[in-house]
Image (cartoon, rainbow, N blue to C red; front, side, top):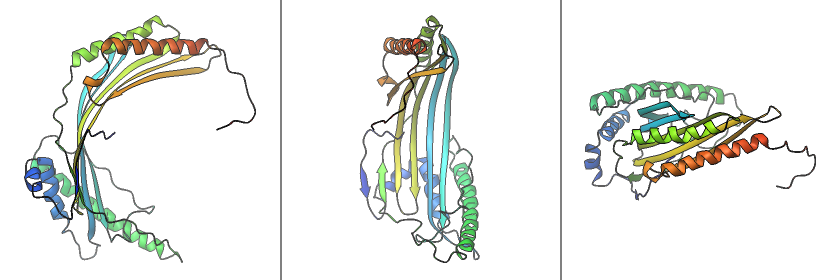
Length: 293
């Protein structure tokens, strides 16, 4: 759901002159950059040396709310920083990936406060775990391939020219919580007038996040990820006992771009009426014959 409004890409073999300054003013980038420099020196005498390391963190702020039949069911803010790390050992032609042994361990959540030492400490632990896991994977992969007479020679990875995509990080998610809760209550209450609709709800999801990524090849990325969506869901039982479903989706970049309350209530009413019509509609006739696609 990456929806940047605009960006510029500069492909260079190294970082631009302004990058050190931008990294220094971004605590997450600073911790990721410094730990990446350290991780590139990883080498144990009995293990392969990493040739590619990548750190990515999705700094996600989210507001979710659900209402049904005029009552609020859920209303909550969530702030998570989800890390995704890669450590490849070997080389571009043959590494620890692309085998049945290539399963990455799961990581915890990245710290929410911009504490440099804590962030670096987490990255150090996860990198150490990935490095040892990757070394075990490539050893197992080599052992299996020794038993294959003509193994596939397709390279495991490809080197690309480093790219720099730097956009401003998004700020804190600001939501008029009371307004949206009232809107959800009012819109969901529409279904009270349609008793044949046995299950219904409105689900609001507002997302404001910043994606950061940098790797040992020199690529560095910081982009905003914005999404606002409202889902209207309804289901019921037809006269023959079969279940019917109906839904409507409203999607925009930011909450300000979503339709006004009156229009959302109208969308809920239309969805309810359509669901009622599905309940009352006769079953379709059975057909056996050719179908043109």
